[in-house]
Amino acid sequence: MTKTLKTIQQKTGSPMVNMGPIKLRQPIPSQGIEQVDPFILLHHYGPYSISETNNPFDLGPHPHRGFEPITLLFKGEQLHRDSLGNESVVKAGDVQWTTAGLGIIHAEGPTKEFVQKGGELEGIQLWLNLPAKNKMMEANYQHVKSEEMLVVENEDKTITLKVVAGEQYNKKGFIKTQTSVNVFTVKTKNSGKMKVELPTTHDSLIYLLDGEIVVNDEVSLKKGATQMVTFNQDGNMIEFEAKAESTLLILSGEPINEPIKQYGPYVMNTQTEIMEAMRDYQMGKMGFLPG
Image 1: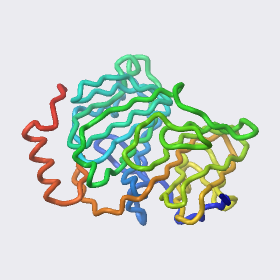
Image 2: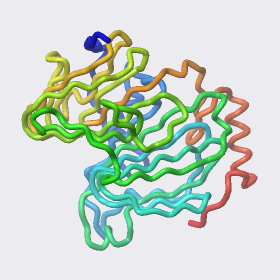
Image 3: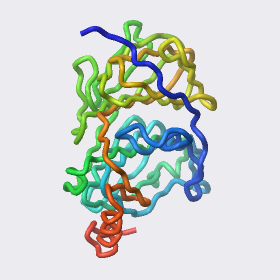
Image 4: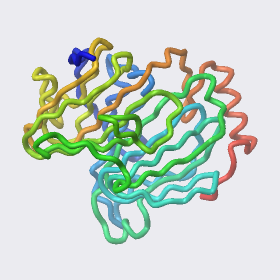
């Protein structure tokens, strides 16, 4: 199969928004980009300096329905608890992938030990939509540790790509997905190039957490400036070059192309389904998780 570069569709910054006491970056949704179907929200939080006197990122029990909330942790340590009975410590490089389905209650925040010793906390909170046929599936939780993920390197071994979900160069991620998606985390040294294969039919993006890269010899991404590019459905490959030590996230997915109704922690297809989700949560049908 001939390899051709996907053309760049949009480039954008990563504007700061308030989420309660927390300030974080939100490139999706933002002005001009409602979603990159099937990815409907991307929050980049931190790096925060966490200590016993400063711990804003402690999210108590809250519900979700109709999508998959995903946490990719880049720095620090978080404790996950949920109404299915799961309790796990997510460390830097790990990924937790929650399939909310018909409903789940979960809580996450820095572990007590991490708060006591102090340190930096940084991560990505990603919301992946579910198609209508899967919105009321049984809830599930997956946790993959950093050292378990399969790795792809460039020829110079200056760039390391971890396959969280999907496939790259015949290496498959261990996360079981409900739709066709790729989720890759990338670390680079201060130079080097890499080509990444992505299906033509996928909507796709590169998001830069830190550092500087040039995408397709065309667009420079740099923290505090342009931090994200999205691509058209016309090629089957993207390429980037590191200009500094960098951290980035590469996403692609088969578009679901269904109507979305969202209210707070619920993502459904109709307003009626949103009302049902609120009622079911109030009636305890999404389970229980002590505070």
